[in-house]
Image 1 (cartoon, rainbow, N blue to C red):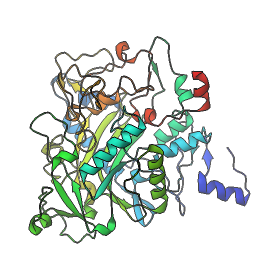
Image 2 (cartoon, rainbow, N blue to C red; image 1 turned 180 degrees about the vertical axis):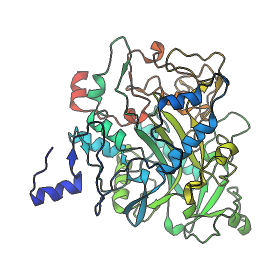
Image 3 (spheres, rainbow, N blue to C red; image 1 turned 60 degrees about the vertical axis):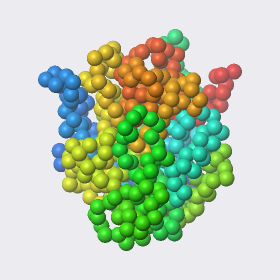
Image 4 (cartoon, helix red, strand yellow; image 1 turned 120 degrees about the vertical axis):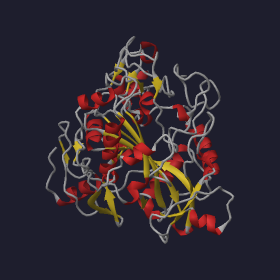
Length: 496
C-alpha cells in the first residue's frame, strides 16, 4: 500500500504502524528512528551456528542408526545455545534508556492481534512504539474460565513471594509475525476455513525461519532495595506438583548492583534472618536480563487485569523492574519445531535438572554477562528413539522430559479432577500426571482451535491420529494462536 505524502497523515501513520509493505513471506527490514522499535532477524553470532539450520541436518542429529536409543545431544545443545546467544545479542536500538536485545525488538502477539483487527494483510515495516505487552500467563489454568483463572493466579501470587509478581509475554520474530498478519491466522473465521468435517484440518505451516518465544518475568519494586525471588532447587524426590510456592529456595536481588560480580551464591530458605546468609544469597540485578516498566506498559498491564477480572492485587506502575527468570523458545526449523527452554540459575555452571553439567559445558564464550546466568534444556524429539511425524509408536521408547521449572513444574492432575492441568493422560507415563513429566513438543502438538484434547505429559503424538484430532484444526504447535484468537464477525456469523 502506498502512503500519501501529506505531512499530517504521514506523522500519524509513523506513530501507529509506520510504512506498510507487501509481505511476500519475507519481512522487510527498516531503519531504526527516534521513538520506534524495529524488529530484527535473529543474529548469528556463534561460529559454526546456522539459522535456520537445514532440517535434514537436525534430523541427522536425532536419527542415528548407530545409537537408536540416543541422539547427538551435543549438536542439539550447541544449536540451542546459538539461538540463545542470538536472542540476547545487543542491537543498536535504545528504548527508555535501555539498549534493546534482539528478542526485545519483536512484536508481541497482542501487537500482531491489533494489526489483524485493523485489517492489515501485509507485513508492517516492523516498527512499533513500545515493548511487547506483559500479561498474566494463560497456561496456568489453561482450561479454566477467565474468572477461575484470575482466582487461581491470585492464589499463586500470594504463595510465591510478597516482593514480586509473575508476568509473561508471547512474541513473534519478524517471520512469524509476517506469516500471522498476512494469513490473518488469529481470526477465528479464518481458522474455521481450515476445518474438515470428519477429518483433520490444519493451518498452513509457519515459515522455516519463524521463531516464537515466551519470556517470563517477576515484576519488582525498584525502591525495595532487595527483592526476594524463588530459584529452582532441582527436581523433587517424588512425583508431585512442584511450583515456585514449594521450592523454599530464594535469592535476593540487589536492585542497586552493589554486590561483588560473579560471587558464589548460596540460596536461602524463606524464614532466613541471618544477615550473613542473606548476603551470601544476594545477587546483582545486572545478573538478570531486565528492563524498567514505563507508563505505557503499566497502563496496558492494568487494563488487561481489569479485562481478565484480576482485581484487588498489585497495580503496575512506571519505574518497576521486569526481571527475566525464564523463556520458552520454538523455531520452525523442522516440521515439529525445535524446542528449547531457559531458566535463571544461581549455579549456571552446574545447573539442576532438567538441565545438566553437560549442557552448561557447551555454553559458548559469546554468551557473557546476564545471558550466561541461564540454564537450558531442549526437546527436539518427543521420545527416544525419535519417531516419525506420523505413524510412530509409544512402544519400546523412553521419555524425553523437557519443562521449565517456572512455567510447568507446578502442573498436576488429569481431567476430570478439579482444576486438573492435563486433559489427556500419557500412555507412556501411567498414573498421576505432573508438570515435571512434560515435553514441550508433545504438549504443543496438541494445540488446536477448540482447545481439545488439551495439555498432555510426555509421549509420542502422531499428527494424523484421528482419535485425537478428528474434526479439529491443528495450529502448527502454536498454543499462542489458540490463546489469542479473535472472535470476529465472520466467525460469529458462521456459528449461527
